[in-house]
Image (cartoon, rainbow, N blue to C red):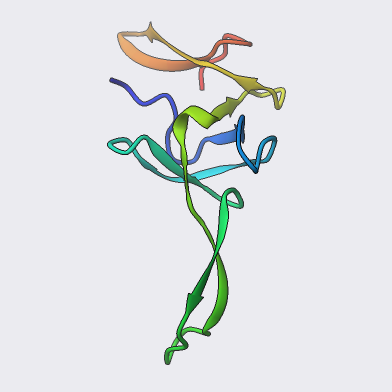
Length: 101
């Protein structure tokens, strides 16, 4: 199945402790059905100091379920994603505006 959400997409969180937060997808794991969004679902990781990195309590974005994310359209509203053919290519489009993503 084609991916509705991809790396670099601007998304909004629909459910959970970070509901309403917006961010950009930094990575997607299609097999697990999860994505890492910058600034969303943050957890504190305690790391040891090394020669090139400072140690301590470092916040890290954890994966979030793809079903809890929605793509942002050009108006800044959450939208569902559809697929259609344009010039013989399968493209994604925002269902609210009909504009290709």
